[in-house]
Structures are given as C-alpha cells and as structure tokens.
Length: 359
Image (cartoon, rainbow, N blue to C red; front, side, top):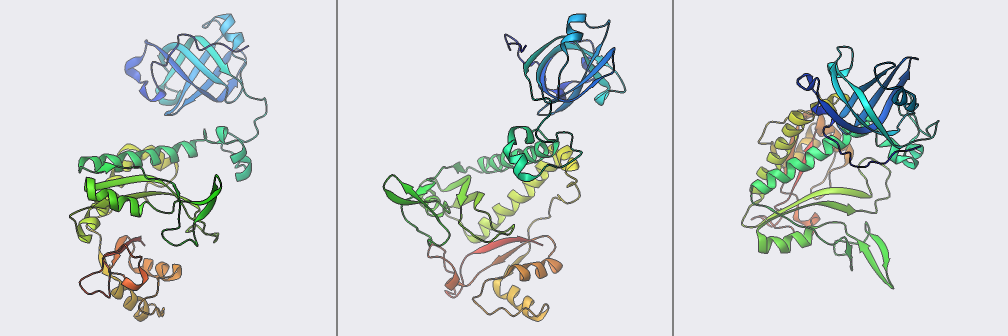
C-alpha cells in the first residue's frame, strides 16, 4: 500500500549532505537505484537529481514495522526521514538511518529496460520507456551539461544588455526557400514550421538593439547524417550599430565562457561521460580566414578542387581539421551564394558573413 506525501517536503538534496551534518535529521526524496537485502540488514541506494545516498536499515535499530515495510524494488519512489550518520564505507562517508519511509510509487517487478547500466537497451525500447531512461546516470550528466550551457549563455548575454526574444514557430510563407521547410495544415491553409528566427530578430534589433533567442527550428533535411537534423536548437543573436567583427568577438567569448563554466560547475558530469579531456577552454581570439584563403589552402595543400563561389564540402572540412584543430572562422563568403539579408562587403563580390568551425 502506498503512502501520501502529506506535509513532508525535502529538506536537502543528496549533494547537500556532509560530515558536518552528522546527527541531524533530514528528509530526502528520490528513486531506488539499488536495493540489497542481507537478512537482518537492508541497504537502499536513493537517487535524486544530484546523486545518491545510502539508506541503512538494521534490524533492532529501526522499528520492526519499518524494517518489514521496506520490501521494495528498483525505481520505487520514496521519501525518507532519518538521521545522518558517519560511515566510511558508504558513498561520501555518510549514511541515513531512517525513522520513517513513505512509499509514493512502485514499479513492476521486472523493469522494461536495464537501469543498472550493465547492458544497453535498444534506442526504440528506451524511447518507449523514456521516463525510466531519463534516470540513467548518462542522461542525467547530459542534461546537467546542457542546462549549464543554457544558464551560462543567458547570463553572459544579459550582462551585456541583450534582450531575450521569442519568435513565431508557425509561418505563413517560405521566406528563405521552401525546399527544407516542413509544411503543415493550419486549419484549412498551408503553413510551415519555421527554419530560422533571422527575419524576426533583424526587425527586433531595430528597436531593442541587442537581442537573442534560444529556441527550436525545423529543417526537412532528408540526409541521414549527424550533420542533418530535422529539429535543432539554436542560439540566434542580432546586434545593431555593430560590424561583423563585433559579432565575431561576442561569439568567441560565448564559446570560451560557456566551456569554462561547464568545466567549473559540471566537471563530475564531464568525467562520467569521459569528456573532460575533450572539453577544453579554447584560447581567444579565434583565427580568422577569408573564404578565398580556405579555398586556396584546399586546392594547394589537399588537392581538393573547389571553384570560387562553391560551398565547402564535408570531406573538405575534415581535411581542414587536420591543419586547423581548434575553433576558427571562415569570413567574407561570396555574395552570390548568400541570401538577400546578408550585408555586402566594400567589395560587393564578397559578403559580411562567416561560419564558425572546429577542427
């Protein structure tokens, strides 16, 4: 039989518990990551969004009623009231001796996906049981890093007097070419999922001067590669009274500052994903190369024949990555291959446009 939450509220997360709290009463809430019944001794590993702590029930120490109540399974949802106790063999050197446990929800005896991490379930199966899959330590690490990235970007831009905007995601016409747009039926008319906030942010920058949006965009790209994603999450910024160089400086500072914040605040997540050595704070400013310089490099060093005005292929970018191993800009692309809203350079053959790449 399940319990009511009642008047209980969490007093702490697992990360808040320390040796200084030994002897104090706390209320924790979370899900059972592991459970061991050794007869007269039971161990519950209780997981919340920050980590896990050991709950220890020893017969004769806790009440008989509580000891018998804790016949629980993996991923049961619990709240635990108890006393913090020092125990060197427990994770973090402390454990909780419970005085009361409230069982808020149960799970089937056999879970549909493996939650121990010992085996990896197929993607379709994990997506069908996403509520469980999201509790994996890998997914928690990914979401913590993603959340830190968003927090860092917003903080950086707010400190520089940017205004956050939200733009429409359903549009009435294919303003940037319709080949990659998702058509939808809007009541009895055709509409499209937006591909970009570009035209909106340009208008808003004429009022608020510095604007940004972090949001979804949609592209009906049929290619099945890691570079083609139908739903993408983008950062768009627009600055009035600025040059392309001003934008380049802001962007490289965002990248530098965001990676720095992730390393400072989410190193445990990076280590779990074995990404700490690959997530390096880059030096700024990033190198700048004009489009023509890159074309000449590809033609001369890598014997990749690209004519002026052609786009740079994926294979060509891979070759560039052998020489340019960190972040770099490609600037001043030909005006002929850029959309109408891109500013031309002093030489109208070129545009005030750029791509940021990483080798």
